[in-house]
Length: 147
Image (tube, rainbow, N blue to C red; front, side, top):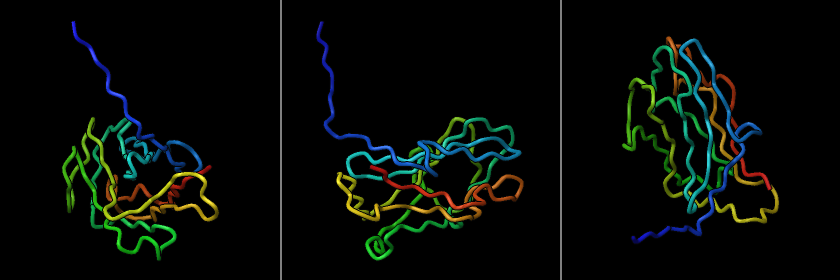
């Protein structure tokens, strides 16, 4: 019998989302969980349905994100993927499938120590995810690295 294990030296760094590891958005259509992490210098925001009892609509053109400090990240491209495929436009967010916000050309070095003003992401109130034509993101969601 041959067995082996694969070890990775790349740490996963979980980022604070509104001061917590996970942040829930609740509405009449259900609950979704927002979390973020860095793996191998790639930052991603995972949006996962916890309990959907209706349907949620996603409109990728409505996403409003600010990367801080803005001057450092002005060349960064933001994309959405759903079920491991990049997507654009509007679609229905189904149960048991995850939505992911990714970043291209993002030099998000989180190796400690970060001196001052750690990099952060702000998802602004927008119609990116809606329930019965009402936006779920009604307050700013702040994602940041805390030492």
